[in-house]
Length: 518
Image 1 (cartoon, rainbow, N blue to C red):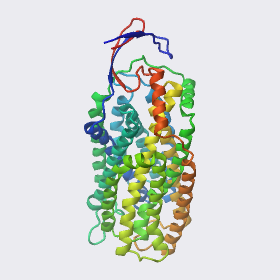
Image 2: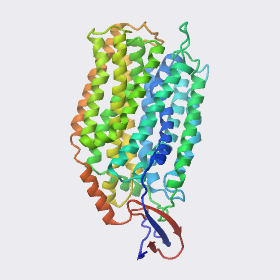
Image 3: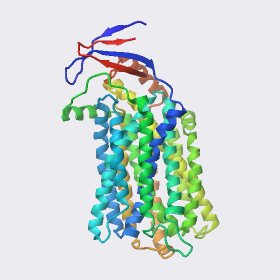
Image 4: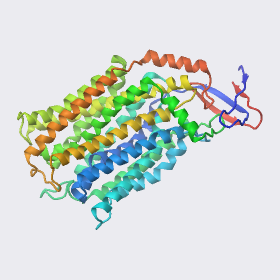
């Protein structure tokens, strides 16, 4: 084997040490690694779906906290979570350890996330409304904060596992598929096992019975999914970093972050994520209100709606093929409008008097909407996440740094902060139409639900239209990505000391820095 010597120095500290590296070609991501990686998304589904679909209903209609207070807490938690994301992403990118950049954070997050999630669903008895609101805020903010230490490194692993343009979309598909299937299964268990409605009408989602055992089950699933994913990937990604630890001042961190995010492509994708996330937050918060109070489905009928959602998730495996056929940007736009049309049809059919409440025809429309709408939006998120990951090499070509964590965190920052506004908008709509507290199925005036539906449809149309106009400005494609890969390879090692596509075993010595490549 030929060997070459080159000088290298730690730019941040000036310290030197001899580094001996052994290169090998980055291995393909097979089904085993893909499956283990997907286990991490099981934790995300078991955590996020109960929070986004049941938490507002639980604290508002069961615990007795006002809808506006609950939506305000949900919004605040998302905004704070969004602020945490880029900071933790930057720290993760610059962290150096014997286990690499990501694993230490993932291991550290497991216990606090699990404990706080369980406590979230077991509020103290006898507390006043403001005390319960504070309890909700502390638990929810804590869950989101500690979860960031797992979710961001987990997502940032995709650009590290593969640099292939289409293989990244496949990995994001695995991630979203595992998360969506888990979320659907968790919903089915909520409706049919833990909060099952009894024949006499008692129990169900509007009764406190079952929420505690549901929380313990989800908490256990969250913990073991995190552990299985992190331990399973340990050997693959626990590579010692080549250069010594980087010690940066706060100002240096900020300047690095600004340089990485100074990208027209990122600005376009982040801008589109703003309006997608507002619509997602709004739709998630109000979905259960449509099912219970507008369509007037029984809880058994609601549980059946999880079946088409599950079927829709299997459609998401076509996301990579759609991206290859139309290009990622056009694929995202097509899927976005499929989602918009599908979620509007049942509401419009009700508003125009085409179908009666609780009818078989309405149930069929809602089932079709659940399958197509969920599949289309999941594929939109898969495609956008893949587009963001393609910016890693674009940023590396400009800055010489690998910034997977920061780029994906910055996108998460935008998405979470604005999704909070969607949740807040849901609370404002409920307040605007004077939706009653302690409502019962069949007792909410039809005019109230009609006003809610019209407001929701107009807002969603505006959001989808703005997203389309912004996303049309995105110009990068596969050829752009491949050009960035060439630039990165030609520029030499990145700030971790590795060339693109390399894995390394590293031996650190104390003599002047000499990197020997075999």
